[in-house]
Length: 103
Length: 185
Image (cartoon, rainbow over all chains, first blue to last red; front, top):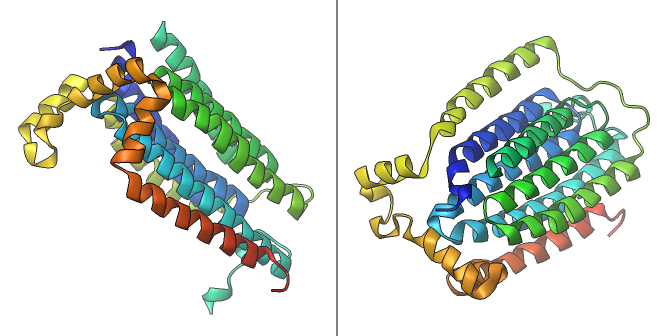
């Protein structure tokens, strides 16, 4: 057992804090870019959980982190392109002004 | 010693993440998140995932965050005005995120022994044969084949099909981003 093992609980607790901060950011902010940043924060919190449990369950957890990173990169590229398109249309990144679906 | 370093970087991660959520301008939010990711990379090293830490710095803090910065600078949003929601939404946020944090924070008391005991009590949730022997095997593997080899072996053997599907996902993302960002197709 390495000394990293003793940190399993604190690592999971830290990822809980980071995930909750990300949720709070998504609920609190109206800037679309900051919203996106908070989603990245949540993905990172989940990655920390994977890495912490990979100490026990083998390298599969670390492989999962790579998949999460890939999906996050793809999501960031497409999402930022959408933000650019909306900004060109509306001249704003504030969610208050993006309410086309509200009817 | 390891624990002290862990708590230092954990405090860094929480502080920078809070600043990221609370900072006014999108630019500083992105830069604070980069700091969070660098602290997390340090934590990954402490948790025995050196290769993941390197990729975290290169891909996440390096590439993804640069993409965010490019977009923030491209939009040229001018002086940041506050974009927090009203007091009702703020109260709801505190309640929801607080409840979530309290529930998830129970994980703090987890130790490998307790996890093993719980899995042993409910074997249908997990393969009992994998009761943490895999972690030891990975560490031996890392000693024998190096840190990268220990991660590469499952990636290209067990997870080969998901790995290949990932390439399709990336191709779709590239095409989608180009189509969306182009003014006229």
